[in-house]
Image (cartoon, rainbow, N blue to C red; front, side, top):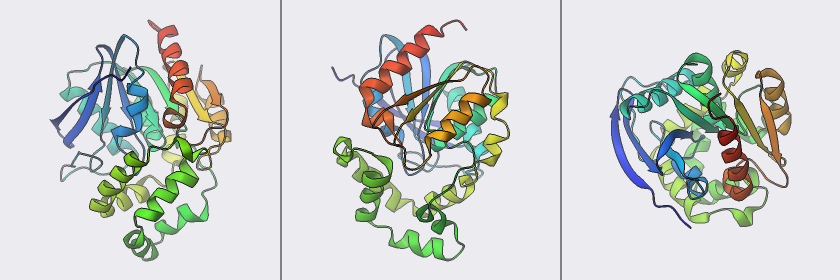
Length: 275
């Protein structure tokens, strides 16, 4: 059964933040990745059990959010923006789930503000250095990157999700991807700035061992963007980190196999209550 989400925009020190939320109870903030929005978690939100308030904000200059003039899209800047969102919602402590770039942001937040995060879920998290394919390195070039981003059209954007993000593209919500492209097309400069500011995950890797809360590490076996080996390294670095791999799944298990992903996530959060 689909669970309806309420949508709103809140004012924070880091910008006007659009978000959707479903359910009531223990707050769970869900942080999306690059070129994405809170819609990443639509399928997960539809499967929330009783007792969880799932909140999916759009990061500054993503989705329905805008950024303040002082916001900087660094790992720490994004982490502070999530804290600002939590503060504006009146949330003292919360569970935190981060996907892809949102995983690196979530690690940064949990390591820097340990008193705010009760439990942490990392999904195919950009967090440790790994070999980036040529397609990912080209936009980082000073002049070439701007030219490539101007040429990055709807077809290329959809192809990226079909062939890089998803292992089984038949499970991709094309309508969602097209909505993401419309936002991307309106905010290309911000997207490129965010890509360049977070292209190096070393600052995240340097503090990952400071994460002290119970941590679930969830990974798609066939992730073509961030290899499974990164997940294995995270498990060895985070005290008490627990890795679960979803077979025949790409970079976004919460979208590609939401039944299995939600089963693992809700079980973890339930078992770790009070810890």
